Length: 246
Picture (cartoon, rainbow, N blue to C red):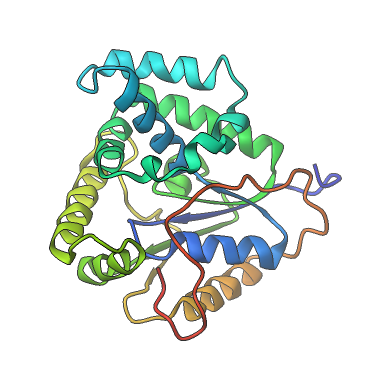
């Protein structure tokens, strides 16, 4: 903990390839905050389910969550090197992520995991799809990044050579629909979130805007993080000034 200072949680939500990871990592560096990619937990579950249980059996997937996140230290699971392989980002795993994310039992497990992590990292930036709505409705700063599907598809194609634009666009639209229509914690901006359309902005422009928002809400540099940030593998890459936000 940082003395008796109140927790600082910055929630960065939005659909795929809207700029969450690039922006969140930059905020963590700027303000000395710990960082968590919350979607990593759902991808871990999807990866394990694909290899260990029938993926059409919700009960089996929820039981798998008990095994993954209860019997083992959650932080160790998220940081495991086995989830840094290319297979972790395979199309099969990616397709299964929104399926497991719709399961109420899975979401309860992941919510408990993220709250546990945040209790150990009280000054943090967390990116996801329901951080400012369901998980941390009292977050100091809530930002919702979005962009046109076509723009996000072009960004993802640049990040993942070998996939066609049409395939990636369909995947993005399918994921958007799944996230926005699920019964539990659907993807939507928090009522008090600042919504930023990154379609025509560079990565640096997005970072600058969100940094200003954070400072306007009293976010200052945390002089010392209690725990080092969890290094979460991500398909997003850093961008130079002038490149499009991802």
